[in-house]
Image (cartoon, rainbow, N blue to C red; front, top):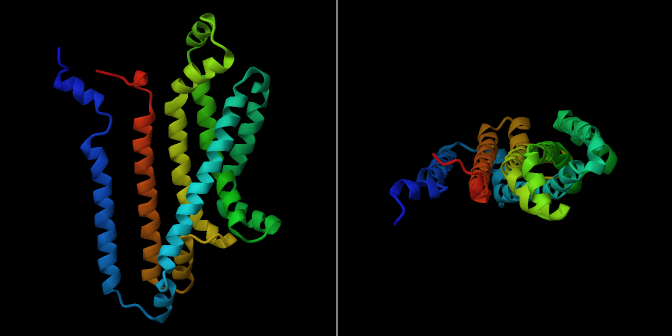
Length: 256
């Protein structure tokens, strides 16, 4: 019996609206910005701030900072979250979460200033600050996702002879995927925003355009840096939302 249309719609995880609406809005936003920027009256200071590929360089640095910091957040926070839900390390969970909370509760600019004093100016310092600031959502969601698993399911898996690693890999992690992915999505957007402060630590990024616009009182440069940062954050959030839908196990989807 062929599947009904309603069933086919349920199988489709990403609708055309989800796949196209935000990209279209971003294209319109960037097009309007480009048209406005072309008609703006730029003086020599503004032209120097954006000439010689400075805008593309800042954007490339910003994307690099976001990608690298997110990669390290994932390889630190997810394994640590798994470790802290194991019986031997559960007592250390409050301490680890307190440290992660301290990292995010500290004002980002203050954290970066302390790291600059300790490590000096450079991209490495900026990356460490961004990583510390973004660990909490991934770590806390990993722990929460694994703790939320139904104990009866875990006992059933052990009862059929699965090893602890098998239970973790085939039962616990798949069930925790939605919460973990939500934490990763939050961390990605946080990293895009925090990376604008990397300029104060010598890390570059779109924050260079923003600070140049503020310090020199050049509105076109400030607007360009701000709009590019907003567009990048929205694009990253959209891509993360698509990944969240695609990577969620089908068995966890609620069907009406």
